[in-house]
Length: 229
Image (tube, one colour):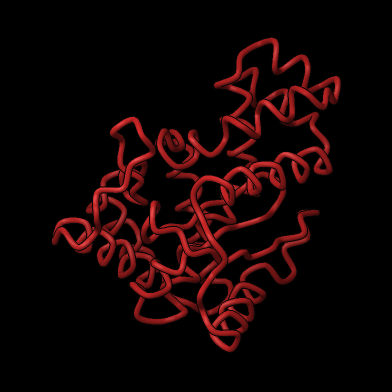
């Protein structure tokens, strides 16, 4: 983890963007289809996303991509470089844009802290760390091929998730939204899963694609969000 963090600090954002683009291509080929949301609904979500990313000044060009992902169900995930994918299924589950903004704020945290890049480098090993520093195209492609499985099944470490939660709560307050919306949406996700309304979605190895399955305990996250009012 320490080596991955040190290497990530030297990786230019242009390389992160390239990695994110290749990862999105892999996801589109294996898991998702174009969004079925109407143009007005998509624009409304992009407007809310614009409020979240306005004035961040971190060098990233954030982009919201919407996809229909029946294999993934209600989900959202950040790719290295600033692209964030939001599934139609999560949009349908949420009660309002504020709840979706809470999820997206969490994903922005992953981008800002370079969690995707760091996790990929950590999983890939020393050879990939060295190759990435050398801007080796083949190494970047290999990382992109591994990222979908890592992001959607293995997930981030608990420390990464807690760090992104903390960022989300602060960012929501900065734009005038309560962290309670974060508590609301993950509670809905938990109920959705427990009610059995989500089919068993797997990637061929028996592990379920589930937004909550790779995240810390829901009750603890709810309590933390509601404490920050």
